[in-house]
Length: 381
Image 1 (cartoon, rainbow, N blue to C red):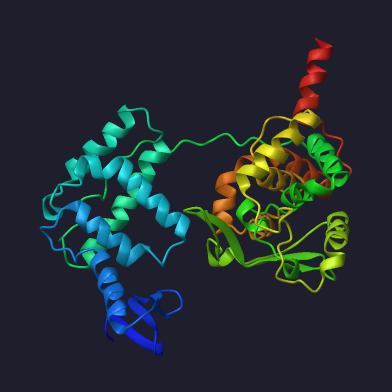
Image 2: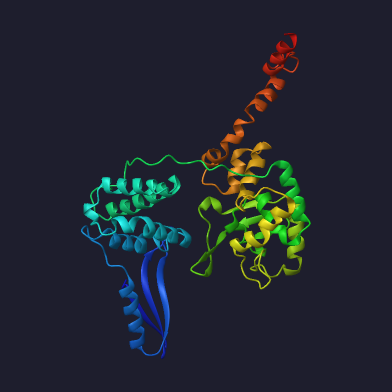
């Protein structure tokens, strides 16, 4: 197939198409499309401009800068979520290109990359940022190996700073009850009640449509996310396949949602949560104008909006909901990941589980528990 095409739509309208390869997930062909008014010469000028804007195909002696341009164009854009692609670009622009961008691809050595990562750490950048930078570079250079531009990936088997475990801040059970009560009394706070009671990500519940709410089953179906990229709104596929899911909401929340959509049942594509002008809600504005004032008004800890998701998971696990069900509700990649993030909560309930099993196995036993025996010894002393 030719890389660029000019298709006549009418005597003075042309469609310029630039082939971008096939989507690795769907197998469908991807194009850049431009509609051009005028004669064929105008359409040819647009096609020439699009082709000129493409990165040059790299060789083994190309600079790392040039290779990364090609890698982002050929292996990232259109294949990963636009926000992820933009994160990659920002990371490379900020940390990698200034130090290694002029180095030839085939001259890049592990010691060069190690020096870069050590320098990042010495500048006070977080272990997460250093590890993420390494992960992006390793992925890019893996592709260079598959394209036969280099023989081996210089980013492999590299010492990295230990991953830091960020302390998760959540509402206690009592605070969560008060928070839910405050949200039920505030029509505009329903979005926070949905967040707390379902564990959805902000990008997921802000993308919900009226048609995603099943009133009969009291459930919400998540099929897409909302992103803000280069000043424009974009609805994208969920982060991963497991993120496409249906979650059940508590009866009290379902009733509030029914009231919310009662007058708009036929507008199934309308957003469930939107601005007064029927535009998507910007997460930053939601936090600054609604969430933080709500926390302050109720005397709650100064948590992040995303911590409502953590609060849901914490409360669910502490109440004995099986980790598999919590993982499915959260849309995690695996139960193992859920346990890695929240597993410490299960440590707290081990003794409780042992006591309950003891009551089942030995219902008539009068043997005192270790703590009770210790108290008895102290009392006799």
